[in-house]
Length: 182
Image (tube, rainbow, N blue to C red; front, side, top):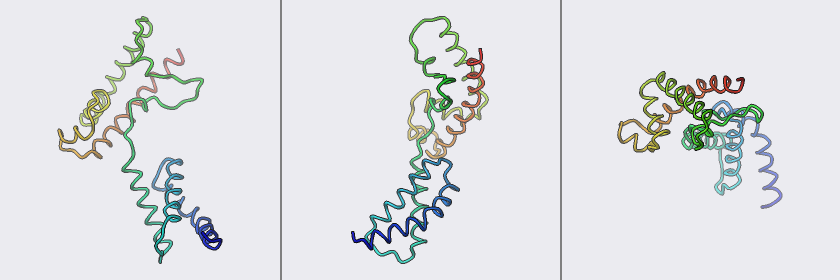
């Protein structure tokens, strides 16, 4: 690449970074995803071998497409995501409860309390959200199979599971606080 070509690319990156990032942030909630999308747009720009007549239009179209691609690839939330987050000091890992094999009476009580709270929270969900969460997360049925069984699109099922996970996360946060403050 010539020095002139590098200079043109640098000029474009400098001129459009702020505008494109603002455009992306309005459509993507995660800052890391926004940065990834912007980087992908500029990679595509640098790798482009065809002349671009309307640079602004081209950049925003590619950006919109990258956002759409990212949303399509969005992985559904998992049971582990229900209790994700928190700092190291107050960290509490639910997986230790439901996968621990020891027969410690205290652990058994905590495990039972977790499952009772989870079951109560599941009962609060609309039936379609509860069904997709239970089938996918607890029984391990893939979204594609659930889609074939129910006639619902995979995206609809993922959305329903997401709402279920958000509700369950909120409900289990109370239990987590109670256990940490005990």
